Amino acid sequence: MPSAIHAENISRTFSRGKIRALQDFSLDVETGIIFGLLGPNGAGKTTFIKILLGLTRPSTGSATLFGVPTERYHARKRIGYLPENHRFPLFLTGSQLLDYCGRLSGMHSKAERETRAELLLKRVNMWQWRNTRIKKYSKGMMQRLGLAQALIHDPDLIFLDEPTDGIDPIGRKEVRDLLLELKNSGKTIFLNSHLLSEVETICDQVAILNKGKLVSQGSVHELTTSDRRFQLYIEGTPQQIEPVLKEHTQSVIAHNDHYEITVRDNKALNAAIDSLRQQGLLIEAIIPHKQSLEDSFFQAVRGHSETDLNTLFETKAKTGANDAD
Amino acid sequence: MLTKTFAVAYYTFRESFARKTFIAFFIISTIILSILLLAVNIDVVDGALASFRFFNQDVKNVDQQLRLIIIGIQSTLSAFLFTGGIFFSIFATASLVPNMLEKGNIDWLLARPISRSMLLFGRSAGALAVVAFNVFYLVGGAWLILSLKSGFWHWPFLLSGLIIVLTFAVLYAFMVFLGVAVQNSAVTIMGAYLILFFSPMLAQRDRIYALLTDKVWQYLLDVLYTMTPRTFEVGDITRLVVMNQPITSWNALWHSLALGVVYFILAILIFNKRNY
Ligand SMILES: Nc1ncnc2c1ncn2[C@@H]1O[C@H](COP(=O)(O)OP(=O)(O)OP(=O)(O)O)[C@@H](O)[C@H]1O
Ligand SMILES: [Mg+2]
Image 1 (cartoon, rainbow over the protein chains, first blue to last red):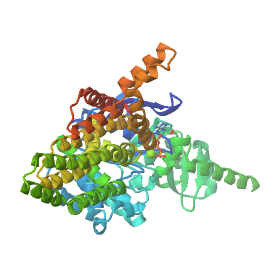
Image 2: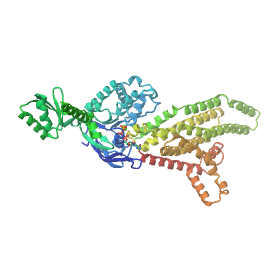
Image 3: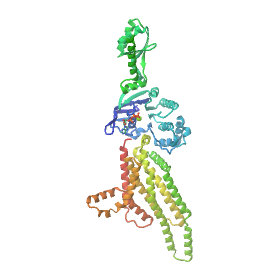
Image 4: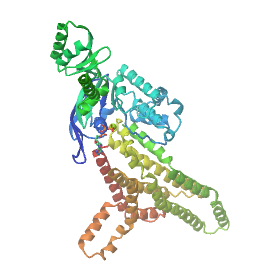
C-alpha cells in the first residue's frame, strides 16, 4: 500500500528565487495517522500543502498522494482540504455550500449529499445555522463550516491548515475529538498548526519546518524525550551529591527532592552513577526527562531550547550562591 | 466530470442571479413584457383590418402595415438588447472569474477532483447561461406576446436573440481571458468596453488609412482588426436579420465566434499554468 503522502526533494521559490519557501523537502506520511507540520510563520507549511493539492507547482521535485502524482486531478478524489483564510461564496447558506462541495467531489446522489451534510453540520455544531447565509457567519462558524466541507465526501486524507483558527476553547476540544475519531476510522490527517500543545496531544508524527527546510521529524514521543537529560532521586546530602554529579555532567539543577542533570552521553551517565555508588550513595530512581513539544520546537527552530536557557541561568545562580558560601 | 462542470455552472448561475444587476435586468424585462402584453393593442389593428375587409379593400396592404409595426417593435427591442443589454451583462458578469480566482476562494475549488479547464468552462457557461436566460426571457416573451396578438410569427426576431447571446459569448471569452490573465474585474470590464468602443472604427479602417502616413500603421490596424471581435458589424447583421433584409456577409459573425474560441483556449492555457 503506497503512503498517503510521498514528497520527494520539493523546492519552491518565489519572486524569481529571492524567497525560498521550500528547500529540498522530502516527506512520507503513512496512512491512518495524524501528522503535524509545525513551523514559524512563513516557514513554508501552506506552500507545501498547496503543492500537494496541485494548487501550486513545485520548482523542482515531485509528490504523490496514495501513489497518484499530484498534477493529476484524480489524485484529489479522496482528499479533503480546509484552507487557511478560506472564503466561501457569501450568498450560499451552509447546507448549500456543502451540497455544492459534495457535487464537485463527485457525490452524484442528492440523498447521499443530504444525509452526509446533516451528519457533518450536526457534528460541527452548525445545524441550527444551516439555512443562514454564510455572509452572516462569525469567524468560528465559518471555520466549522470549512471543516464540514472538507469532510463532505468522506475523504481518506484530510489536509487541515490551522483547523482551530478562530474557534473557541470548547470548540477546539470538539475539533480535537473529531480528528481523533476520524483517525480511529482509518483516515489520515495532515495538519498545519502553531498550537504546539494541541499538536502534542493529538499528533502521532511531527515534522518541524523552518525557513523552508526540514529541521526535525519523528514521533511526538521521540521529539519530547531527550536522551541527554535525567531526573535523579538520590538519598544523601547536597554536600555529598553535588560535587560528584558536577564532575560527570554538563549541568546540574537541584530541586527539592531530586536533581536534574544533563549529560554528554550514556557513558557519562553511567560514570556518574558509578561514582555515586562508590560514595555509598543510594540511587532511588533515574527518570529520563520529558520535554514539551514546545521545547523541541524552540530547539529545532532556534538551535536551543527555552529550558536550556533556564538551565544556564540556574546553574549560574547556583554557582554564584556557592561562591558566596 | 460533466456533472461536476454542471454543478459549477449551476452555482455560478445562482450567484449571478443573487446580484442586483441581473435582478434589475429581469425587472426591466418584465416591465417591457407587461407593457407589450397590456398596452399594445393589436386588436385595434385587427379591427381596422376587419373593417378594411368589410369594405373589401386591399387587405394585403394592411397586413403589411401590421407586420411593419411588429418588426419595428422587435427591432427596437433587439437594438436595446444589443447595446444596453450587452453593456449591462458585461458589467454584471465581469467579476465572476476574478472573484473565483481570489485567494481563499480558489483553494477549496481547486482542491476538488475537477480539472481546471472544466472549472473555468463551468464558470463561463454559468455566466453565459444567466445572460442567455435574460435575453431569451425578453426576446422569447416579446416574440410570443406579439405573435399571439397579431398572428404574425416573425422567426428572425428569435434568431437575433441568439446572435446577441453569441456576441456576448465572444466578448465573455475575451473577458475570461483577461480575468485569468490579470485577475481584476475593472480591467476585465474595461477590456470588453474597449472592444465595443473600437469595433466601429476598426470596421471602417479604410477611411482611417487615408490619414495614416506610414504603411506600418495600416498593418498594425489590420492586426488589431483581426484580433478584435467585430461587434459593430455583428450588430449590423442583427439589425438586418430582424428587419428581414438580405445579409451580404455573415463573415463578421464567424470571425468573432472563432476569436471567442481562441480567447477561451488562451484563458484555459493560462489558467492551467497558474499557481495559486
Ligand atoms: N504567492 C507567493 N508569492 C510570493 N511569496 C510567497 C507566495 N506564497 C508564499 N510566499 C512566501 O513563501 C514563504 C512561505 O509561505 P507559507 O505561506 O508557506 O508559510 P506558512 O508556513 O504557511 O506560514 P504561516 O504559519 O504564517 O501560515 C513565505 O516567505 C511567503 O512570503
Ligand atoms: Mg500557512
